[in-house]
Image (cartoon, rainbow, N blue to C red; front, side, top):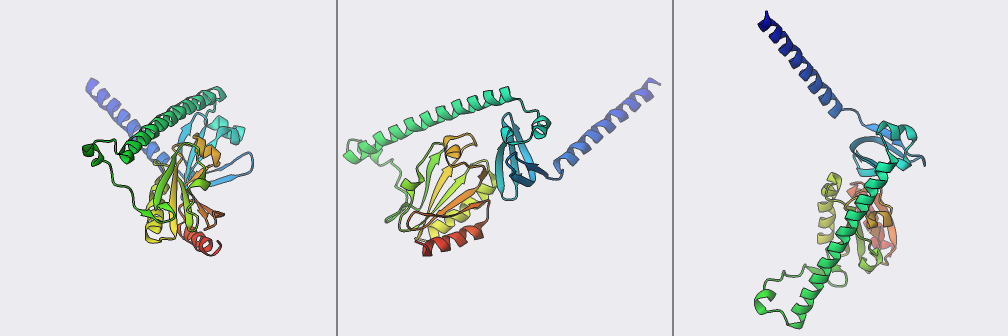
Length: 254
């Protein structure tokens, strides 16, 4: 009798595990959702990939966006258990982390400048000079073909434009799948066309200084500048053909 009862309990537990697993599977393939911000901006057919204390991260076919709870209706805030105090604490923690990162990068730049100064003034021992990496390929009049000009920190794009040529400015992040897909296409365009230069800006996360500086809400984002340094167009998402179209326009418009 006890053995039969144990078997019944085991079968019941197995059935519950199966139903739980089935529910998880259905949840993983759930249909994408739609969201509408307070200002009327709509995010259609998107999937919530991450919920953070201050907002939700949405993924669509064109890229990834971070939408803050303060931009969303109260019903959405309640749905994701938004707590203003937790959001403030999280934002402060992110800001502190970003400040530490910027200080670390500043220290690295200082040390690199010292090493470069020693190298060019001939004060570095010959054996260490030989260990220095060879400079990247440079195209006359425009600097490097492909250059990362910021990792989260503020940057003046105008100082990095390849005047006389077309400049693509790619806002991206290492954790963005669409960015990883688009990046090789942009780099190929720059390496195969001497009239195109590519400048890359790693936003790191949505709270960084550079993301706020240029109001980046979705990535990848590509800004296209003409030969005179004027912004011709902006492409949000991985639309390579649209980027090429703006490049053609930029070549003839300046």
